[in-house]
Image (tube, rainbow over all chains, first blue to last red):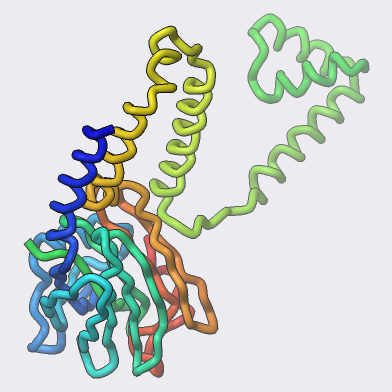
Length: 143
Length: 168
């Protein structure tokens, strides 16, 4: 029983330090089949994320980064991130490497997603956009 | 014409008979008008079914659809094997051990706290606030990626919300 308590205390205390705050990166991405974006401010998505997106069963070949922000959220707290004039997110650190993501379009909450998000894990939310293109909000822990 | 010959006729139509059996059937067909009429009807019905078979569109990629079925079969087979494994003497000895159970429980709690166990069971909980709540999820275990597809158009007034060809 002492051994059990010891294991629990060691792992529990170690985890407490790590679990207090989660560092995240949110990206607003535009998916298209056009090789070049009409918006010169757009830049190609970083290769690691692009590789993952291209392996998903979507029809788009090119992904452009509209905005990218890194932020930290203490455990139990919520942070609001504005990704564009129409798109913002609220991320709550639910502890145990889990997040609650609220997505807002034109000020209206359109979806709430709860998901475990350890390192190397990608949470992709998306929908259709004009002219057979798409929008994506990608959330993950940066390297 | 008995029922047995009717089955033989269907087998002949499907090319399942040996050469000698097929010759025998052809001899009967030459002499039996009723059998010839049945063969023509069977052939006609087969053509109709082949020509009008409904095409089924899957709501997800074909590979993903079949991989789900494969995973479910493997899961059920594994569950069946686990049920059929008899208890050995050592499992009877170890299982009631309170100390071992406590150690395992403590280890699991620690692992959960560390986020190690969060790597499994990645079904997201989704709540949508849209009139059309046709949200879809897709999980790629190899890429460790979860996709939640919402029916919300990127730009309300321009987006083609009726597009059905979003996913390959």
